[in-house]
Image (cartoon, rainbow, N blue to C red; front, top):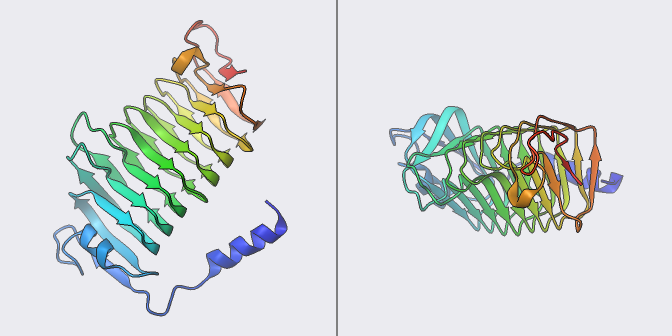
Length: 268
């Protein structure tokens, strides 16, 4: 990242909220500014923050075509749905949206959708969240750019912890991704930084990289992951079409489908 890009990024982050922006306060019993989270999202304007008081909100929500919006939990906030055909939080066509300090969970077995889905969006941040119990993935993003997945706990998902497809210029940093069917899968992406994550005890490959360009993988712990898709390594599996820079990763205790005694965890 060059100096000019850093300067521009700093200006964007430091930009003040619009004068008309407001804080919307919600409570689990419906006595806040709106009866439920979806109603607050639908009514929100650019720059608004939706602040959720502690407790459980039994719903799934859709954020579509919204800009400059924050959904923030204020201590022990859970969004829970028993609808196996719905994402807990679905984002589509949004820009500059923040999800922070939320617990998202599917409560019914056999669900078919992610906890958080991000589609055709830009500058979405998912930070400090606990995402689990999905039939597909914790965070599943497609055709999006400038995503920041920071400091989340992603676990107990029956397909993948985190999946990026056709995502560009994004950061995945400081996450604990454990106990999923698979850890992290990147496909057809470019300009992705995977840094300081712990990817452990997933039933398939810790990291699976396919047809990726300009991806950096540094300072991660990839440990005790098991059999991989297609017979690759349990730790890090990379195809020969990918361009990846590795630095200072700790890869150990991973098993190989063809040779369980192989703990190198690195392919190639």
